[in-house]
Length: 226
Image (cartoon, rainbow, N blue to C red):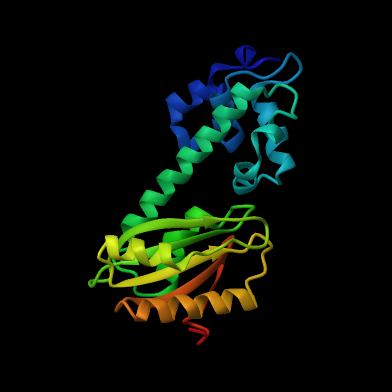
């Protein structure tokens, strides 16, 4: 049966109107986004199949490329773009909500919660800097560089130039390890020390270096490596 032949109470749109969005499963919410399935599968069944391929993990679904999504019969580029757009909007909403709850960057956990939404789920490395004022408030998060699966190039001059532009008095740097291994490499350690020494000459404090992978992180400060 197509969704149109279902009882009204079971149709995702009608269900959402009657019971609210929280009553819908992930597959039902995404079925509303794509609008239709195939002549053999309803939109819900199609999304259930796609979610099953990612072990029902929304994060893994977010990581799927447009090309990967279009490998599923019934998902063209238009529907794939809708799925990616919906997931990106959800990510940004979560980011805004998380950051608003953090008043000051006083711990590695606060720093992790501030940056994880940007880099935790990436399949390539990115290097970011959180610029902080005298009161410990976040001035801005800036992506300094993007790299491959295992490394990214860090230009210390760019990091410090942006700090001076923002009148930052402190910084926390962060990057991700797509491999899942949180142990800092020799390069990570050397770059951290170079940034620390260079920023010291400008009276800017390097408070921490956070390595992120999924919901876990490594803090140079906590591990006495700063």
